[in-house]
Image (cartoon, rainbow, N blue to C red; front, side, top):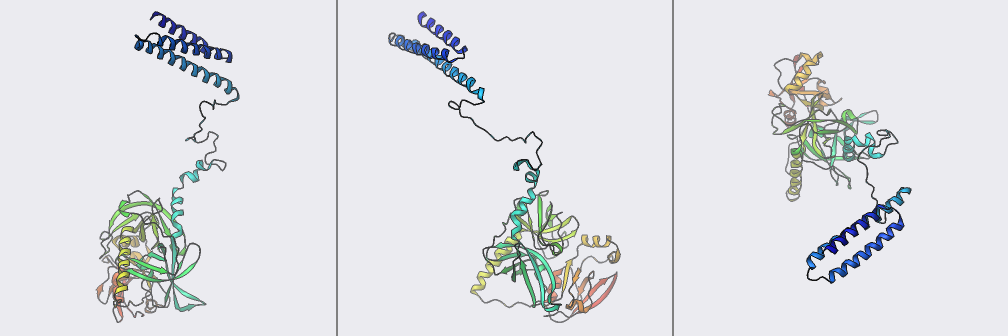
Length: 444
């Protein structure tokens, strides 16, 4: 036992001394001593079987200490030699290079010579990334009258926006974009690449203000429909469309509210919770998509009250509308199409008045400030098509229709319903603070 202890001490002292020397000759000597030590330890272990447990413990200690010091001295020596040339001992430990999470210290962030992942326009333009995903699916919708010619072109009646929802040419838009036009009206759809197609109205619902168009084109890429129930106030959104015929326009804002009830907006007959946003939506934007930062459609641009207050139909309502339309197509394949009342042509672009819109019109001054205080509802005439029945009867932009055939008018749906009836329409119109009677003969 004392001999083994002295042997271990001598080995440790010898190995420690050898470790301090940093040249190759000492390292070779160290290896020879370690080899002799291992051999002596093995012989000593074989000659003392009775005390094998204690001796094995001392032997393992000596072997572990020797092997550890040997490997450490070898690595240190190689490291000292190769660091002279700035090389790491790759033979023992491989070199690993990781990307730095920190920007470079040369002040190149935001500059042209900066790496792509450090340029500000690539780091923070998240809205542009979302728009890039969705813009190819947005379409421009124009409507013209093929019977009325101005110079050599057809007379332009209206325009709006829409977006692709089916690779077989199915397009979703607002009902008011494609309704209330004569049979001679032609609907054209222009894609982002400039190609233009004739379109037909496949399904329309004036209550939800949604419509489906179909063009003769396949292989299209539909936009991804999101989940409007998951939208949160304060979330970034972008409105895509063609405001005032300026196609492929983008406006950005946030969601102001996710559950603005139709009753709160003064819209009768609509059980819907609108998405309110401050992204600019104006005439021509109607029917275009309201997208989130993932490029998913969460709403259909529908109407605006004033700057900073606009509304979109939640995409969940559009999904339900499309499902009903698909079921109807299947049923029509089995049963004959039922007869429906034919809507006549008036020739106006309308806006349903709400309390907020009335207050906005009255605050602008001019002729609109003279709206009688007892006017709480009606339909505002935004545009009158030249040569249309409304134009020939004397209706002008800015008129407010309050009654038709002695029935009060609360929304544009009441006007559409009257156009499904026969006979002339006797309208009560508010103009410059005065009430007038206007008789209109709608055109079939």
